[in-house]
Image 1 (cartoon, helix red, strand yellow):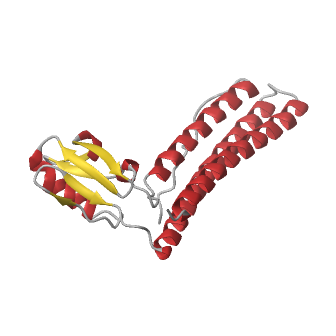
Image 2 (cartoon, rainbow, N blue to C red; image 1 turned 120 degrees about the horizontal axis):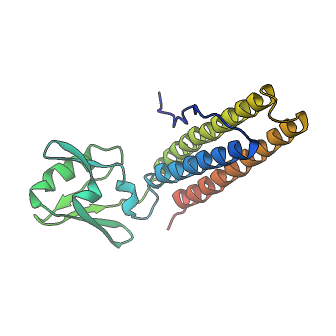
Image 3 (cartoon, rainbow, N blue to C red; image 1 turned 90 degrees about the horizontal axis):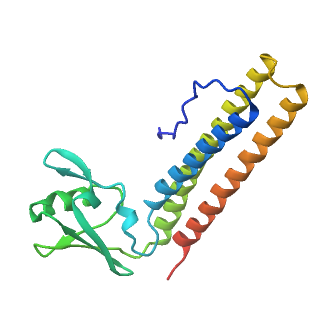
Length: 201
């Protein structure tokens, strides 16, 4: 079962539609940022240090992001180099990369780790597009959860007689429009990423 990005239902009390709208916008912005971060770790046919974003290294007993223990470079399209700040970390770094689901096989010369980025097979590209679609759907769900919460807050305003029925109708339309806009933004980003995955250089 996948961990779906959960937008926790807020315990806010709002006095106006404007406040609800601003809050929903802020949460939707965060959902898009989270999507872009999750998407950056899905590899494409070209080397990119962002594919190693989710790698954690056992640094003296503490799982630490790779970029906090080493300098990463892309000297050519099919290669990532990793220079650990402490050479005793070469073995743990290699182990973390090898045991990840990235399918990469690092090697080192005692100072620098070289991670060749093999060309993607057609099968692997299809798998990565599937993974991308799952990630995108998780974040679409997160956006819809924000919409649901915003609508609940609007219902509370009308129940508390803070807005008129016209305001209520308009607010629901605006929230729907806002959600559609963010889902479109997410879909466009996913489409660009999919093209990068399927693009055979």
